[in-house]
Image (cartoon, rainbow, N blue to C red; front, top):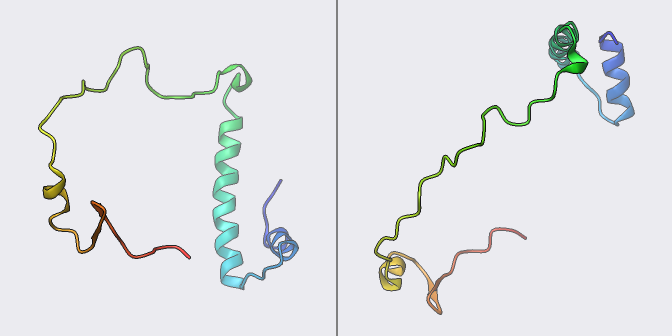
Length: 97
């Protein structure tokens, strides 16, 4: 499928928004780049036979470090810089709704 401004404008209209001419040119340019990349990928020989890559590294070994037990932080020390404390919990202003 070849991308052009008319198709982009039709898609935009069907989604109930209008693009300015500068936006149409920018979107067309970006979509053409994507289309070019897709065409390059489709030219890879035996592409259908290649198994999709799920993760780029082998996970046969554990790459995480062992947990280390350290001295715990006392509640008083954890709360000493808090502006507002209720029932040994830090109270913060409501963020949503």
